[in-house]
Image (cartoon, rainbow, N blue to C red):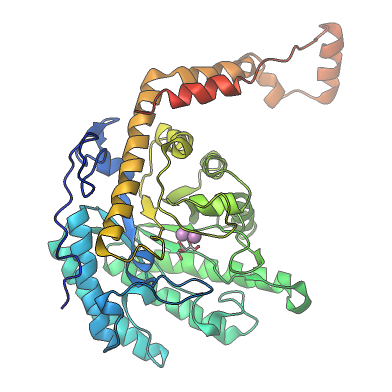
Length: 435
Ligand code: XLS
Ligand code: NI
Ligand code: NI
């Protein structure tokens, strides 16, 4: 077995004046924030795929990362080596959770049964690791987008055999997630969409997706999986028209198929931006409809129009969404999965640590600002005052009619005056909470 991270020590908390790049400046796991330890609020997770599988390729060049488990060799042995190194990474970082796709942790076989055997071998190894480790599984998911069989979709494929293959794969991955004590199960519909309506029967495909998700919900209850089922919206990538474009689109779809109580959302920061929303918009929408499940915390690039999956490092951008989340009771069963990768020139083991440390510090620093914001209450007061007129006008939301309102506007000579929205005042207020 290799020991890729052998030169990296356990990462300590040293505070913001430390000059040690391999230490936390803000992420003090046990610090009491809003009544409980910081790590229990943030529930941060390492994602297996970007941190241990992604080779550093881009459309113009291949692998840049030379990790021992990526060298040629027996794929099962490589998977075990990767697993050992992954757990050493989790422990040195002191991260409480991780997330994986089925194909990230074990190699695929020639047939479904062979793949299942290989999955079982590795899942049993993961089980053993979890027994002696503090790390837990935030969520598992099936990769229904990388293999060529899924090029025209998984649940939405024109070929029912591919639908069946995907269904079997999801069943297996849900069972494995349950075995590992996973707290959620995620579905990101990477290929559930289309390139051109020329070759696409949209109604048929949407019905297939509805049926597929109904079976997923049914299976959850059948096996007694207690975690949440989560759908992760994303627009335009990899297909031109994704069926799960954004939170509102997914919510409408769920309601159509009577699934709105079975699924919640896994909202990803950069997917929100790609949908031409802000992250806080997606969060506020999900919370307004009681469907926020979990977060993929990453960041995009202002100049590059695709999913760059960078580690979050900007507190200003996260304060408002975190405020909504934590004012509303927090992440519940969900967490902050760092669905992010280092840049392809960041080829050393310590680069993986710098990335994760920075993003954990950013989230911790944001939460500390949000605690001040909640305790201070000025922002909340502002919002309440802005809408307080509605407290004295309850009939408008219940029993009134256009006719009544029309009569009243005339008889009471209602002549409203516009009020300032105070955006700049609020921007300054929010910045004042950041330490
Ligand atoms: C891709 C998605 C993916 C999901 C899990 O853009 O973010 O990584 O989180 O399949
Ligand atoms: Ni994601
Ligand atoms: Ni993504």
